[in-house]
Length: 436
Image 1: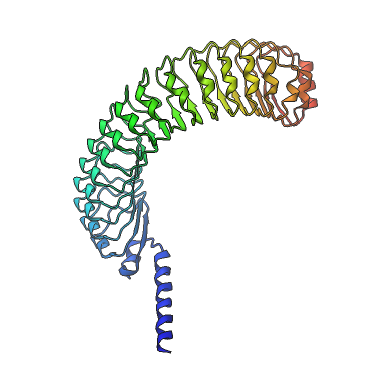
Image 2 (image 1 turned 60 degrees about the vertical axis):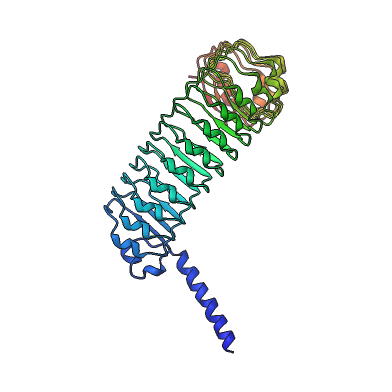
């Protein structure tokens, strides 16, 4: 009987403990009533201007969120919260972290989004359990050399901040899988970046890069590389060794040609080459048979190779704002295409095969020189949106009335007669027609 009683008492105690761990306290005053029973604390509001030193009494605290306050600093006693695993300090005015911060040996995650912090103390390298760093929209300028000691880090996101470089020790983070550094002022990466052999995602968008270290080719597990909106004139040959790439974004640079190796990335599903200075695509572009999305927006392309028709899995194609006067006959082979943006070109006609794009749902052909649309456009029964404004159309094919899913047509700045406009409105009353 005594054993049963002890077992019941044990179960009840565990239930009580779990109940306490599930509770989140909303004020420091409430939390300090029974400090040993506080595991989660959330403090919010602009009326909060400081955290009392007595917070150190919450020795079992695991999760601490201090959000949208007027705090400019943290008490040294925060280092006493040795059971903390997660810290969320978003939307504050905190400029620095105390040295005692390094005593939080169990800390796994820290969020400093939209704060005033500029750097970490050197003691930051003592956070041996840290796995995740999120710092966005800040004045953050510098990572300490000691960051290389954080062997459990697998995610770093320091975006829209003021970083100008990375310490050499970044290469010691052997478990790092995601490194996101968009919107900073970085000009170079250290050669040690090549040591991050478990890295899967590398985002360097919106920085000031002109080149990458040759060691980038050692990141053989990399699946996503984004170097868009930088100052690359060409791409490093060692990028060709990244054979596991699924997503490659090099848009918004000044590339004039593509290295041959890009077309050997057989696993590539998304390729962004938009806003460069490309005037030709290699015939081998057709080798990228697993492409789902291809962006060629705002280049200098005058033609597309016939081999583009080999991209039979392609669902999104963006060729807006080029110098294309025609599309290849093979275009109709891309029967999985759902979105085609070909506006702001010099297209005078569409190939006969165009109507084979039976899955096309969104079509943009505005600001071209088209005089007609295919007579059998009515066979493209999944078309929902058509934009053909600013062309030279005098009529639309009669078969367009067969497009029962059509909900929008923009056809302003053409030469349609008023009678035809009225007839179209009558025949497709559920469609939003824009004639002006």
